[in-house]
Image 1 (cartoon, helix red, strand yellow):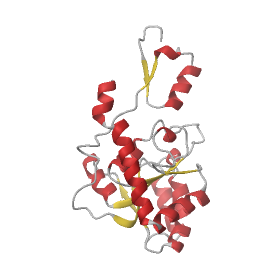
Image 2 (cartoon, helix red, strand yellow):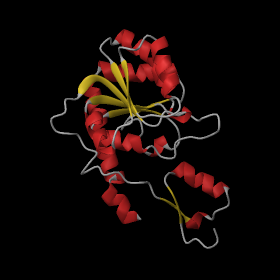
Image 3 (cartoon, helix red, strand yellow):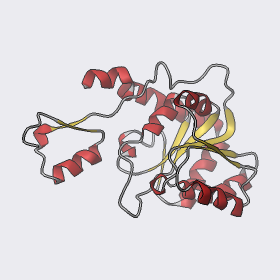
Length: 226
C-alpha cells in the first residue's frame, strides 16, 4: 500500500471497506467501471419492448438473489397473468432455481435462457419493460460491488427494480429506479406490480434512469477519469 499512488475502487461501500483496512483516504479514488452506453447498451431498433416481460441477467449464485424473485412470481402472475420472466445467465444454482420454478408452477411464465454472448444482451434487455436485480448478502458475506447490470439495463431502456444494497444505491435512487428491501418477497411483489400496472410510470422511470447513467457511467466518461 505504501508504494501505491492511488487505490481505485468501484463504489463508495468499497471505499469504506478499504478505509477500514487502513488505506489513507488521500490515496483512495472511487472509479466506477464504465459501460458502452452509446454504442452497445442502448435500445435496439426494431426490437419490440413487451410491457409484460421481466428480465434478470447475471450469474446464478446466492448473492444474486434469484430465489427471491422466483418466490415473488406466483403473486405477480396472479395479478398480471400475462407476465413472463426471462432468466439470462448460468451458474451452480441453475438446477435448484429451475426446480423452484417448477415447484411454484411457474414453468409457463419463467424461462431460463442460460449464458448468452455480450452482443446478445442489448436485444434481450430491449425486449423487456423491467429488469430486476434482486441481490442479497450471501451467507459468506459476499455482495455486489457496483451493479453493472443495472447500468446496462437502464442503457437499453428498462425500468429497474433492485435491492437497496449500498453499492446498488450508488447507481440508482427512488427517482431513477425502484429500490426494494433485500430478500423481501412482499416488497418485490409490490414494486413489480406497481410498474406492471402503470406503463407510463414504468417508461418515465426508465427514461430518468437512462439519463442518469449516461451522465455518469458511459465509458467515454469513465475512461477520461482513469
